[in-house]
Image (cartoon, rainbow, N blue to C red; front, side, top):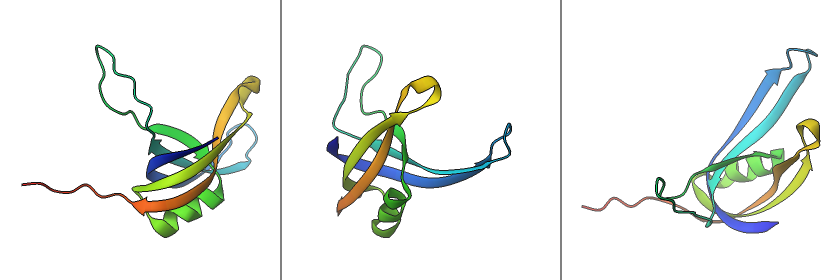
Length: 102
């Protein structure tokens, strides 16, 4: 699936699996898209968090965040076969900056 989003942050992580001792590595991306549901108790956009590939991390590292990116996502089997969304591509479109108004 392809969509235009505001990537807020991309971060790499590394940890040791307590059961197997295996070193696990990955990347997490926080972003906002144009989907917004207003309810009686919530207004505004809630950032989403997804796993991402190393290619995505390097694209965001090169062009910085926050920024507007065209992304592609895929699903993969997760725990107990439940679908997990993974960001597999991010193409930089333009920077995003909050302007300070007086």
